[in-house]
Image (cartoon, rainbow, N blue to C red; front, side):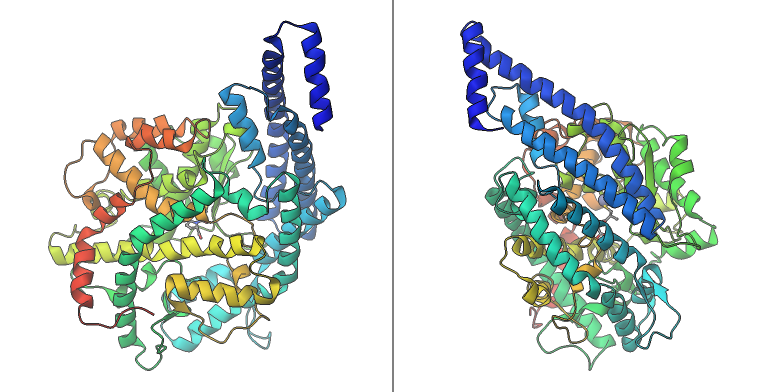
Length: 600
Ligand code: X8Z
Ligand code: ZN
């Protein structure tokens, strides 16, 4: 709305009402607008979610077109609402309405241009990028081999030790992203236009504005957290590289980096799959749960029930019947789907679902707890207006299920029959810690660099001519990993990671890796646990469940420090719980690395 109209509104009100009225009227108008927007958006969001669900679980040109149309219509509604919301920006509205107006402004990770033609183009590109990722497969360099999709290629990375086979699966999967390059560059232009239309410098600044602090302060906050945990990552890197050098003696690069295909994961984001190669004290205790899952015939439903049972043991409700009927638990044999795990509340009123290609592995079991964490968050804030139906910040949403999964201790696994023996001595404890650090600590630099890259791309500091070079510079700088084979600007390696074509902001996962330990510690305190943090499991503890629920039910209705305070008593994200958890390993790593040349 233009300033002239706002002026007219005030003048009319002044002429007809007592001196205090205009503010009250403006505040009422703001509240009425927020109420109306909440009601409208709920319908629109639900329609878009239905279309996206179908597009992700049945990839065809038609479902892609339907998803693009639904997205376009949601974007149009949001553009209209945002334009109208400007009228209420300066109104002395109540706290709740002002927060809702702010959340409306920062709600889109893909901000749509006002221009209808370009909005439609953006929706089409977004749907195409998602589908390209979902359909990705590698059929060999000559196109004649049997084609393999992502889960199969991931399995190669997780289990294979032969260098050439690893390179083939790695490079094969990364080749699926090459065609995304042009679409991605255009998506960046259009999203930036949408961000500028609502007063941001670019889409990256919009992303950084969703944390109840200035975008600059948020950037500094992520840096503060990274610096606190970096020494532990550096120690782990040094140790892992040393062990891998024994396995691939002639192959390790001289610059101190680790080739990205050796870490057991397609993106080298976590490296728990190479635990056996780097186990501190081999043969001490069998921590391999995969064999037990297979032996006990854990199918996708049984795996999901086990995860649900954990939440129920805390006093939370069982998942609704519709969850079991409508979710996608396994990779269908007859059609292409996006296998990347996700959690949904399709109608924003309890139509809870997950979409996942569950395998009988510990990795899938942990991911299931992660996804159910999302569902229990959805369920806890379902009663709120839609603009408040979100995590206190997006890092909270990602941290809930992971915090619960920290309670999957060896003692818990023994209790549910998935482990024979609970490790008792120091050597076994170090094995357990190593396995967990390969998942949790290894992830930290990866969690930070993805959006470091995207923030630079949105800001124009990185342009399409140097997309890939900038990507590998960050991979090297943060993670100390290098590309297994030569890369160039003919490649588009960022596109091989789901969240880039899916346009899902990633800093949330970095925050979550730290927050989850802070949550875990608070929940263990609530449960009255005494002892070292890494031994705590809140399984079956209702007091911990109540404490968790008290935070979850706030959704995004309050600034995140308040929500954090409800659970932890602190208003600051604090990495000290993570450091406390890994204290035994850290001491041991320092000992191991003494006298070694570390770093890259
Ligand atoms: O994408 C996810 C979840 C869905 S929100 C499966 N995660 C990140 C990833 O896979 O890259 C969880 C950990 C990090
Ligand atoms: Zn998640």
